[in-house]
Length: 108
Image 1: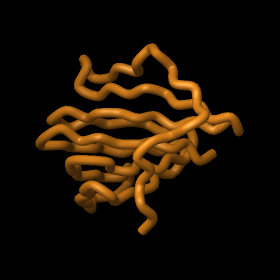
Image 2: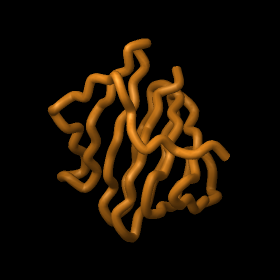
Image 3: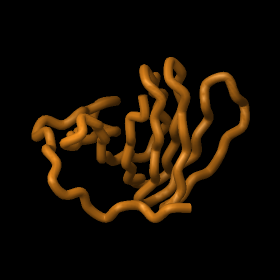
Image 4: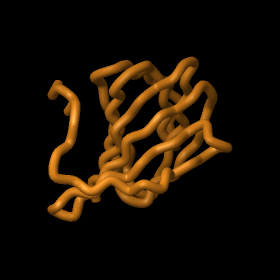
């Protein structure tokens, strides 16, 4: 499994936060020179459902979560250093018992 980056250089970071679920999920967009985008964020304790337009890769930087992809019953646990992919035009439910940090890469 590849190691997660500890920093990004040569990028633009949007100052305005993306705030979801009354502030229980917060991220900032990171724009790369090649036009790709990632978000860096925090998930506070709770259960949250997200829809996807394009495929996404979620990398867990710190903490842990449980994830159920739309259309599946299996709940999978992910801790720091692990990742999961979500198909485009789909969604997932993510649950955290404590603070969880992530990097979301938009793949499509």
